[in-house]
Image (tube, rainbow, N blue to C red; front, side, top):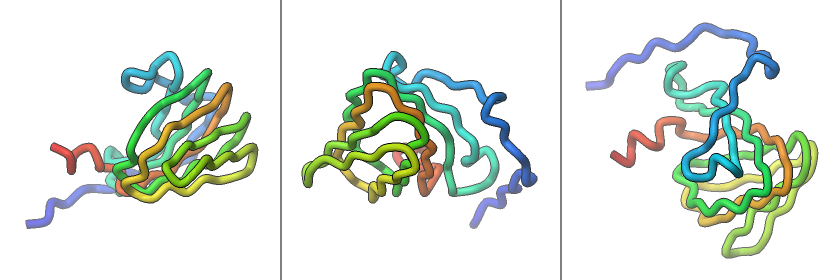
Length: 121
């Protein structure tokens, strides 16, 4: 049986009204704020992330696109480093082993599916 989820209404999200929160064990290196996700009834997760003196290991559990707004981000993968600056994007397919590296950066991210953590339970 498929569960029905009501989608949230269309809206404008003002950057200056967003409240960033520390990200897991790396709160001193990364803060995030969700813009869209499961709470909106969508499988498209989006948000902003701030990196400060970051070196964060991770394995993606979703498809991800990073759009760098400010600063520079390097994503170290087994295949090599991917580096991007303002207006550049980095594509990371599901299952990518990586390390996010940034001295100071602001990024916009998109992930699919947004409910990846529920699938792990």
